[in-house]
Image (cartoon, rainbow, N blue to C red; front, side):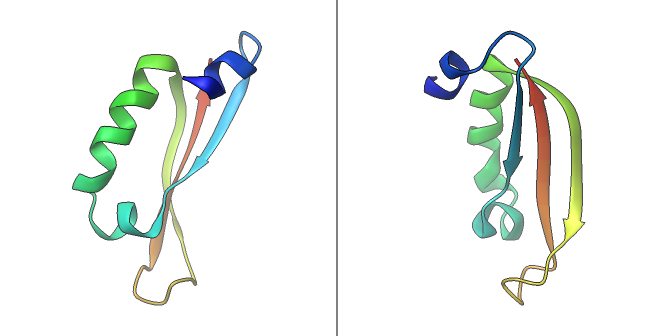
Amino acid sequence: MKISSLLKNDGLLIFESQTIDAAIPKKFESKLKVLNKNFIIIEDRMVKSEYPIKVPERRFLIFRK
């Protein structure tokens, strides 16, 4: 994974879900699987979203390499 190779050990990756991931959580599962292979989740939360209107929340994650 290119992002992992660019980060130093203990480096942080901040990830925001795409609209489709928030609207259809199953769509995010494959992405999360890849991220979990390369990083450790240190924060995972849903936050209120104003855009797009039909997606009231988005998922934000913080990972450590």
